Length: 362
Image 1 (cartoon, rainbow, N blue to C red):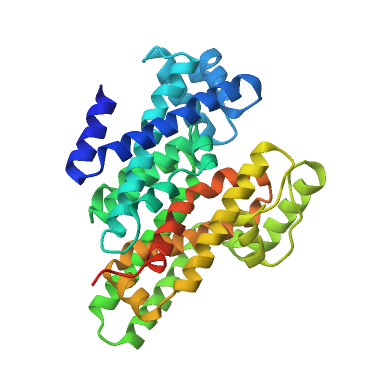
Image 2 (cartoon, rainbow, N blue to C red; image 1 turned 60 degrees about the vertical axis):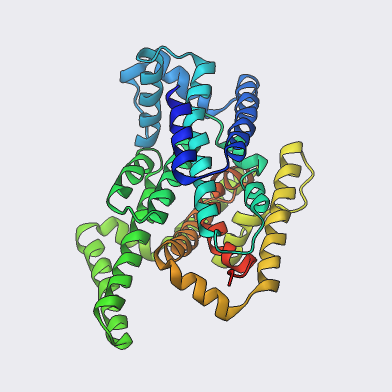
């Protein structure tokens, strides 16, 4: 009942189409049932986390703190809410569904003054692999909920509560939290400099000083991270080559970070090895078509006008997307992992592309 109440509040407060919202929820729950059946037949992290919480509970010890947090969540669901394996899927599906609704609202809000078909926006929420990977009661569903909440607060210009979804992301994906926090602080500081200083040259100078200070802070207080920062691409290449030589599913990569980033986000495009690979290939081709359409419709003057109207969310989305893809693609060259984790970044991609898909209404 609490879930229905929250959904209804979102519909009423944000004036969303009730049929579209409940269609998204119903569509997502189809994938929740599919993911539950899949988890019974295949080895997966969800089953491992659930069993760890059930048998070891608070005594579970993990190499990664994020895995420990997931097990603690399962422990709470099992021993405090009395949920069993199936009902954990249903319960966590409430949060992932709300994540999709909030992302859908952000897309609608950004495009409310555009000549763009609302059904197209709805269609972009329905990518099968996005719903499948976030339908498991795991890190991906939690990140989806927190990301949707983060963008919702950002578009509503409620900046102080942003710490809440960031803390949630930190609990399960600390590296994504750091990328988002760094992007938010850096973009906000730069925008503040542009307002404070009238001369652009002075603004550029202070931005340079800020970047230098951040590097110096890392060097003196986090020397290990400083070394990683300047050997980032070399370490990533060593890691990728090591895994690609010994594990299936890892594809060969080169030394060009741009090409590796594109492959991470938009490949494969013609892999017919299994049903899942076919679906992912079709989705990636659709993403290529969307981007090609943006290129063909690109209007410099109109785009600048639109991006200037909501600088923070567009600049944040751009920086989060670019930095996120560079980092993830540098250490991951696995089709299964990239097909799952890239959906953390896809909302940022769509937010950037929306102004290019349609011109603003006069």
